[in-house]
Length: 220
Image (cartoon, rainbow, N blue to C red; front, side, top):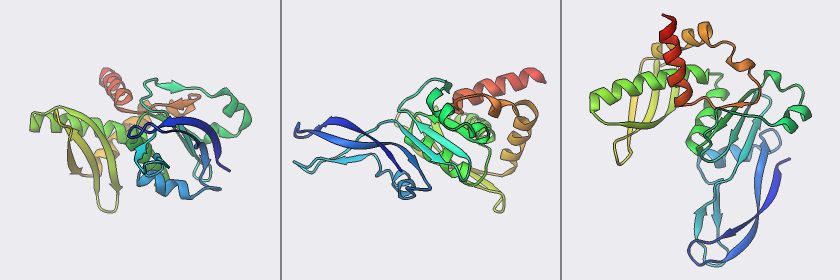
């Protein structure tokens, strides 16, 4: 059963104040419909009853897929590398084998869900993403601000990313061989196999990949 909380919101168009029930925690087993709404980004939309204006209302959400053994904690613009939830850990003592991640954007949340559903290693994906973004920055002469994996297919021998380039954050789709992911995965298995043993929700993002790659180069 989804856990809800009350929140007072003000419509940015007409100024109408309303009290709404927002979902702050969801389990895909009892509420499978949430996944579709997250993927099409309609989950965080709120419609004003007075003027009909649709507004994106971002708020923390704990997304749990215990059958596939992962949890994604979305906290808007989170910057911490690790989040602890003592109440959650004590309530579910069997979470030691569950992959737990904290993310700061909806795109990152969608990415983690897709990767974990396909039993992919998100640490290896982040390392691959960083390597590809550095090559892309050199070839285009533009700053790569962000990027997300949109496809990871061993059968098709490809991994596809959506990057955002330049001052206007122009969307750019880049596809490369699956071998890039395999090389990153070998690095993770050799040097970062203990990461999953850390407690709490881990923020495995570009910052993590940058530091991990720096440390890896130091090992060589």
